[in-house]
Length: 150
Image (cartoon, rainbow, N blue to C red; front, side):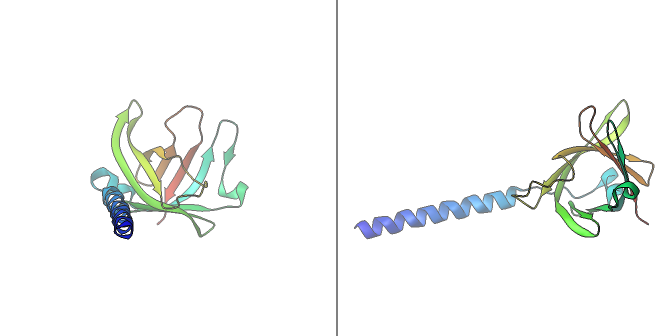
């Protein structure tokens, strides 16, 4: 009797764990890049980061960075040609007195890594068709400029 009860509890725990796993995996949303957001698709090369007191560039840091947005709602960041971060994105379109922008959320694949190129939610604005401006939704924070790779 005790053995049957133990098996029932173990089976129930396994079923509960499996159900929770399936729910988490299927509820994760990826936003395919559609409409105006489709213009983000492609690879962008880091040009500079401006902060309150300094400006960083590939020339004065000796480092290169790229970010690639893939139509299927994914992104990948490389530093010096090596994969640094990747995952999926969700976004919404908005506007303010400066114009239209995207609120972009970076959902990293790496669960335990503290390394992050951008905050979880960033504001992304296209400047023309070949420049990308990425910043946080706050004042006095670094702004990153990326240019489209040809």
